[in-house]
Image (tube, rainbow, N blue to C red; front, side, top):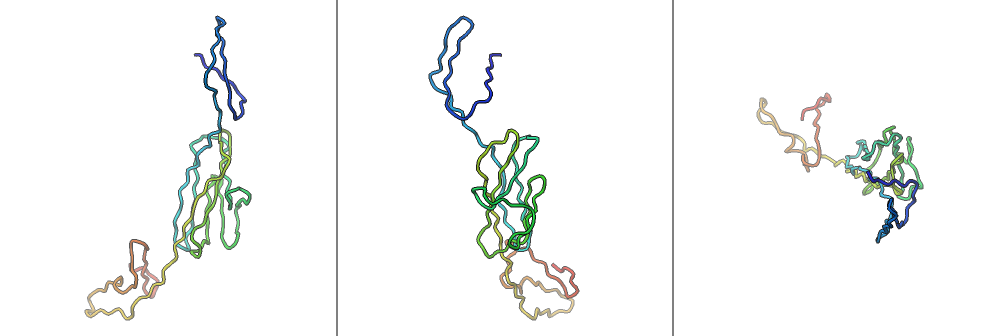
Length: 182
C-alpha cells in the first residue's frame, strides 16, 4: 500500500529522503513540519437568572477511553476547581466533566471558568474559557388595588405589574393560598 509509518516523532521540522528498491534517491524539496493540533473543546456560554443553577457541559469529538475534564478559576490553570463550596458558590463536578454552579449572584458582570481535557489522543495545552452571565431578579411592584368592576369579570394582573416584560422574564402570580394564577 506504500504507507510509511514513523512513530515517536516530537514536534519539529523534518526532511525526508526515500530510496526505492532500484537505488534511486528521492528528496523532498519542502520539509515536513509537525505541530500539535489541539483537540477542540466544545462548550457553550450560559446565561441564567439569579437563584438558578448554571450547568456547563464540555464535549470533545473523541472516543478517548480515559477522557477527563479539569476545571479552573484561572486561564493559566493554576487554581483548579473541585466539588464543594467556595466563596458562597457551590461547585459540583460530575464524572462526565459537567460542572454545576449554584449561588452565583448578579452583582458582577460575568463569571469566567476554564476547562481542559485530558486523555489518550487528546491534545491541548491551554484551558478553554466559558462564561456565565447572571441576570438580576427585577423588583416588581403591583399597583394596589387591582379593581374589577364586574364581580363575574376578570382582571388582567399584567396590566398592573410595573415593568412587565414577558420576553425577558417568566412570571408566576400566586394567590394568597400560594397556588399559581398565571
